[in-house]
Image 1 (cartoon, rainbow, N blue to C red):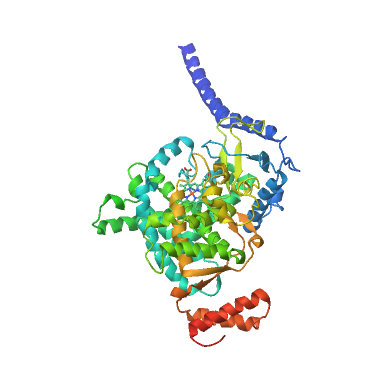
Image 2: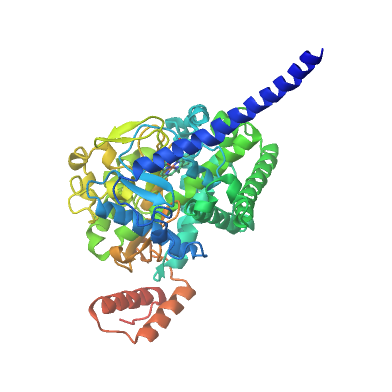
Length: 546
Ligand code: HEM
């Protein structure tokens, strides 16, 4: 009895000790040892930092650990990654150290595992950030949303939205504008309509707030990623910023829930129950739990509007540059051949025949890919350039560097849509053009995005001729989740003669104001610009000013 009692107490202690030890080993010691092994392994690699502890952090955050302006930090990240490729023309196997966390810049791999950084985006277990096992199931589930048949349904929303968007542009004619707000708001409408059958009209109070929240989510992600104290969840929780970070995620989820309630109300009033009206929510409802649906919706809406909006702004800006006016004219001629005057856009087959349009879009995506890097966690050891990369390492591929490889793209900084004509394009390797990434975890929405970009570009170019106000190289960039211009991508739109709208009073006032301010300068470019303004003013007021 005595012995059996003692044995009983000891064995339960022993059992407890074994369980605790097992958890400590599996969840703490083993990852820590593996991490130390990774750190030691990569310290021999290219671009060794000056400080072992801080790595390259000081180049991103010069006054670490004191507060730094987010804008400054995102610009530094871009400049540093850009420098990495300058320093290493072979474009691979360079290690960037965020303090003690190594990120290896290497060539792409087929791995589907995403590193822990993706969790910082606040997208939960959405497709973009989920672990491989869940990702495989969800990707299969979501793929039908982008099928050829479904694309025709999406196109209907796009045509409608883009027409209403282009009507708003009449107010912007004749003055330098970056259409950032109008475009973001419009691409958001499109993805919301496809995803939830509801769109937000501009009077919806929360719309601006929602766009701000998505922007905030991106900034928070970079802020977390670049701070070594914010890497582990439990250390992150000790900082006040974590409250703001989680609050942003909660606010976005609240917003999505509001949209879902509106959708429910609309469905109750609607009589139509046709299968082609199925939206993203219909596709997932009942197949994933409530949190899963929220995660996928935030992912789809976040990934599906910001990237497209940014690309469209670059497309317009690139076409508007003074040395690209021939390209713009060629594109215009192609577009009016298929869509003269105000003929409705609703013909996908005709859109697909606009070959030069696709070339212009691809060239813009090459030069200004909105997502500029992709990261993967290696699931196995791999050998690259005779060096071993260890399982668990974080590998980064830079799209900007890949798209500027002079062996594939001679004179890589030049905007040249002819690179993509059928003959030249056949010589470009698939892995040399990766704005939508490459391999199994590439963008699921790329056909959706391309269609959307084509529809917007057709509608804008057939209505307006564009002129950019800045030189391309003069625009600094900053690396948030997407690569953003620091200065506005300003263009001046002039209504094409065939459908010139009346200039609104605000624009006439603006032109007069500019002319007075500049005293009608007689310099080359300046005088051409002023003459154009005068002509426009004359056309709109009917007076003989010039
Ligand atoms: C020009 C527009 C777009 C660009 C340049 C772009 C780019 C990308 C890239 C590079 C990735 C891979 C990210 C990574 O490797 O970590 C990605 C993934 C993704 N994109 Fe896009 N995207 C665009 C538009 C869209 C649209 C319109 C949608 C939805 C309607 C969308 C939904 C997604 C989703 C859900 C993923 C995650 C896929 C997965 O992991 O399986 N994207 N996108």
